[in-house]
Image (cartoon, rainbow, N blue to C red; front, side, top):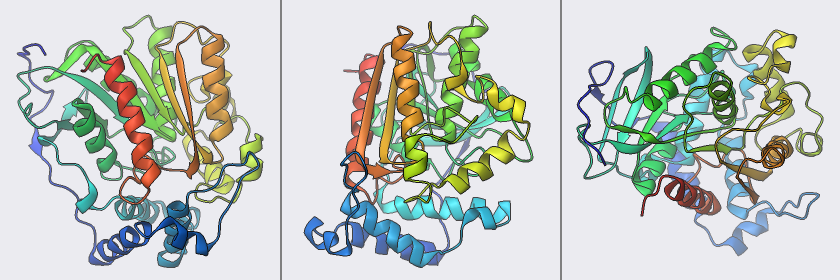
Length: 367
């Protein structure tokens, strides 16, 4: 760790864990009890095996069934403001306050004009000391999701990885369509890599994100490479969107109706994030469309066995490897989308996140 003398781009303000409505807290408690039941008992609710022979984890199936009882609304049928509230509340139910890791401090400030939530591990609360840093982009289809929806994810990475985490509050569509969110994600990453953010070590930076945030992670790294700018040590892509040109993979066909993310959801997201069809062929919207993937940082790609995005995530990992990029590809066969913020209810989500932390610590040389 090195000494740092610069200040954040704006005065930091402390942040307390989110407190959702009482009904959501009660539902979260119920989900926690349900998921903790013995696997054999949960199997009585039925099982689901995909075409590759993966079995959906019993706790995943049980909690998704419970979620449909608690909320039968499809977010694509709701006003966008209501959908945003719904996703945040679902994220809380998947990892309630009682399940999140405690960290040293959580503040919010601006970096390059973009709001970020800055997590620091215990014992390293002061930004006078630089830490290895994860720049995190939340999921939510570029339309939904927030700093709150992925608070538990960032706390997990911070506490288990012993790193600082900057969660980026990038602009959302449709108010701000492509490439606005990417511009924000890139601006924050460049600022960190240039040593402009107090408490972060520009020599040890990882970019990470899930779903739409995984897409932004891939796109940010492509843009930095193309512009000849410094690159992070590692890019971590969790259940990433890598191709918005077409939805015709085998996993799209098999999981068009879920179990969680559906083809209808992805169409809805795409229309709002990239309304211009020509833009969908840009490598910054569809990283899999890039003709050259060489010269990119090492990648850790984690996909879920029961997810429409599974095949395109694996395809991107294979393309990276073919281009000479060091890649770790991990398929979590019994999980679905999203698992990064479901550690409070899904046992194997916790295992998956700890595996990712292991890759993170290795890339950042944290003993």
